[in-house]
Image (cartoon, rainbow, N blue to C red; front, side, top):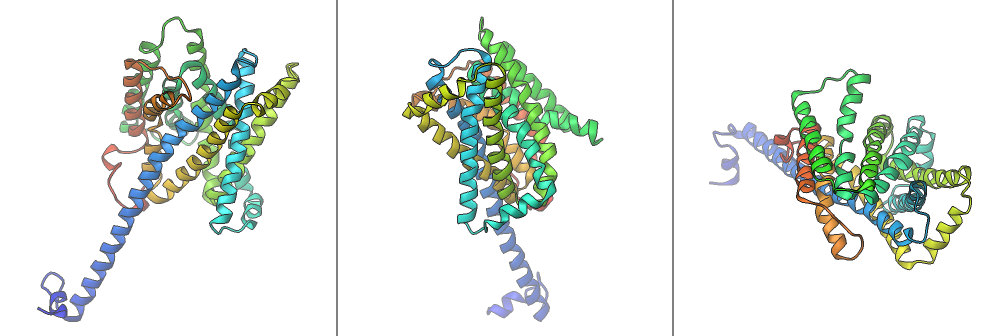
Length: 371
C-alpha cells in the first residue's frame, strides 16, 4: 500500500479530503506533543523553584548565624540584621536577573518602558509589603522556630488570598478549597502545637512572626497580579520586586537603627560581613538562589499554567525537610524537626495543593490555556 492509499483510509475519508484530514490530525498531534513537553518542563522548573524557595532563606539565616554571636541579641537587632543582609542579596539577585534578560536578547530600553507603565510601578508597593515584611519576617521566623515549622505557617498565603478575594472581590470559595483550608490548618496545628519543642520561648515568638508572612504574601499577590499582566514579568519582577525590595530593606534597616538610637549598628554589620569570608559566600549563595527562584517561578507560569505552577511552588513546606537535613549535613545550618513536624508539613502541603488546584488535574498534561 503506497503513501496516498494509506492517507485515504476509511478512518479519514477518501482522496483529497482524506489527505487533508490526515495532515490536520498529524499537525494537531505534533502540537499536542510540543505542549506536553512544555508543560513537563514547566512542572520541572516549578519543582526546582519550590526547593530554592527554601534554600535562599536558609542561606540568609546561615549568613546571620555567622555574625550573630558578635552582634546584639535583641529581637530588633535580629530583624535589622536579617533584612539588611537580605536586602543586599535581593538587590544583587535582581541585578543578576536584569543582566540575564539583557544577555538573552531583551533590550535594556525595556527597563524604561516598564517604568513608564503606571500599573507596573504598582509592583513597588507589593515589593514593600513582600520584601521587608513578608520575606524579612520569614527569615527571622526561620531562625527562631526552625525552617519547617515556620514554613507551615508561611504556606497559609493561598488561604489568606482566598479569604481576601471572598471579602473584596466577592469570589466564591469552592467546596474543594474549603476542604483544603481545613486540612492545611489541621496540618499547621499538628506541626506547631503537637510538634512544638517544649520550653522554647523563641519558638512561640518565631511562630507569631511567621503569622505575618502569609498576610504579606497574599497582599503581594493581589496587588501585583494586574501589574504582571500588563508588563513583562521577566523585567518587572527583578526591577521592582527584587531591586526595589532590596533597596527598601536596606533603607528600612538603616531607618530603624537610627530612630531607635542604634546608629552604629549598620556600620558594625558592614564590618562583620566584610571581615567574614564564609558570611559573604553565604550571601552570594542567597543572591544566586533568589535569582534562580524568581526566574524559574515566572517561567513555570508561562510553560505549565498558573494553577499547576502555584500548586507545585507551594510544596516548599515539604522541601524544607530534605533541604534542612542536607544543609545540616553540609555544615551550613543546624536543622531540627520531629515526627509531628514532618507529618504536619506533609498535611499542610496536601491541603494547600487542594486550595490552589484540582489534584486530579495537577499532573495532567493538558493545554495551559485551560489553566
